[in-house]
Image 1 (tube, rainbow, N blue to C red):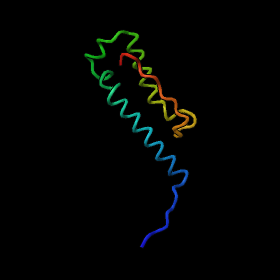
Image 2 (image 1 turned 45 degrees about the horizontal axis):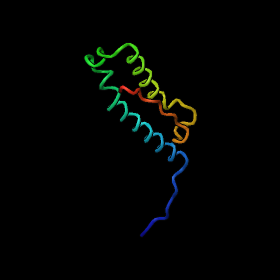
Image 3 (image 1 turned 180 degrees about the vertical axis):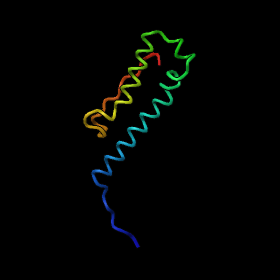
Image 4 (image 1 turned 60 degrees about the vertical axis):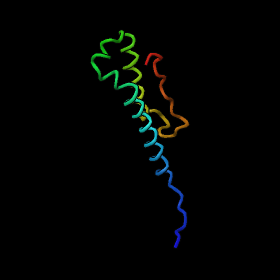
Length: 85
């Protein structure tokens, strides 16, 4: 007893793409950004420029779902991580 294949709808595809992009973004935040931003000792050791870069990078990651074309992965512009991070 096999059932016929039913292709995913555009909405299902978009929901899966959004989930994958948010997951990737969360991984970057959890592994690269938040350990610095949320650690007072590490944060205090940064220069003012580094703090600004970290805040800008973090906000750009958080703003990814607001980009036009989201969740199409072909249209997403991922922010550039600061070299020192």
